[in-house]
Amino acid sequence: MNALTLRDLSGMPEFVQAEALQHLVWGEDDSADPADLMMVIQHEGGLVAGAFEQDELIGYVFGFPTRDRSIQHSHRLAVSPSWRGRGLALQLKHYQRRWCLERGIELVRWTFDPLRHINAHLNVCRLGVTASTYLTDYYGAMKGINAGLSSDRLLAEWHLNSPRVIALAQGSHVPLSTREASDSPSFTIKIPADLDALIAHDQVGAMAMRMQVREELIRHFTAGFCITDYDPLRFEYHLTKSVR
Image 1: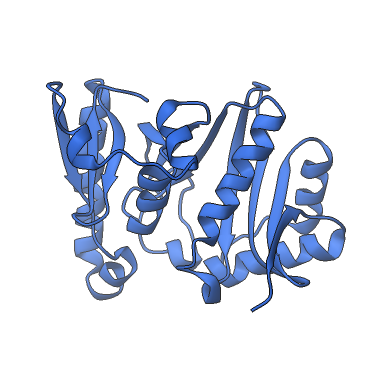
Image 2: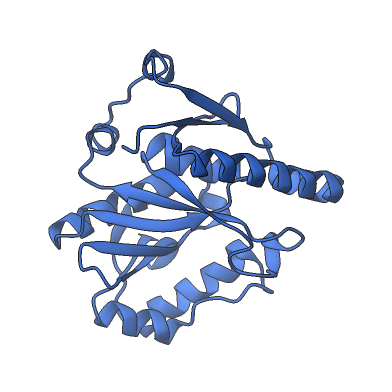
């Protein structure tokens, strides 16, 4: 197996590969970010980086500046289906973290579907993001793999210099059972183990799950709670009053 190289994209052919990778991951019907737009955003201070096996782009991450120079919005993260399960998404996010810190960016935000286990596991459990904002039907009707459900999203907040994020980046992790020892109130919210399978076999049940999780998360967020962890074995978000 050839060694992987993680670096910023360079030259229009590589941005064209990134556009094609989006269709491969999210489906041909999904609206991909155009190659020329990503190139211009990179030129103006955004991040478009990829993982390469020789000259083939097998994963990429795309983020752009916000009105606050210390905050980046991370818009896309994609890994080729043949490379899933090998930790490449985590490597790309660690690359993004280093890139941002070198430029004085301390907070990265992005959205993700609260019902997708794979995203909750990566974002909350392995990267250490928190979430306390629920965006109802954020993108409107969607196509590709996201078709069939309202496009509800959580706003992830990745505080790059928080103690937990630093510990996770260094390979350490406080066991969930230890963190639960606090006397402060907490709640758990369960999500499906496989959202795509649920949609395929029981779309009515998938929509019912969407509505249930939406109601529970909005209620707890309004009461001042925040998603601070995720149990990948029980498929449960953990909510506490702590925001870091």
